[in-house]
Length: 128
Image 1 (tube, rainbow, N blue to C red):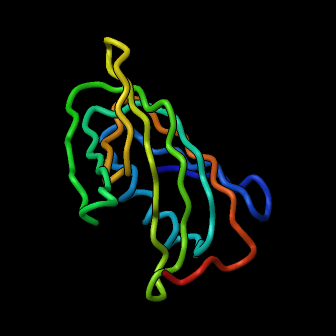
Image 2: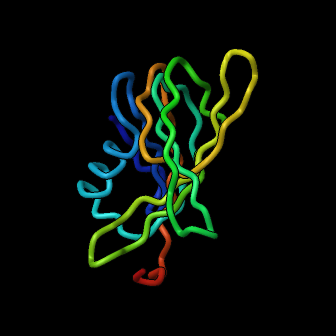
């Protein structure tokens, strides 16, 4: 993972092939002491775990997608929970037949690149 600070509130974070998006983002948050932010990302991954939340049952169902997928979009935020920053992200991925899958991003292993544009939020979000 590499990153560059653009200004006092913004970063570009580059996750490299073989690295995991959420894992590396958490390392970045710790290193830069970011506790509240929003972010968007694009890239490619060869293994993605997504989750779907059922409002009726209040439970998640997870599914793993293997093989190269385009990351069409990751949108998320970082907020404090029990005093620690937590990444909450949703992802849309597409396969080589142009089928798309979307859900809560549990984790994704980068196979090409993944570029994240992250902007710190000055106010504190609710401690959930």
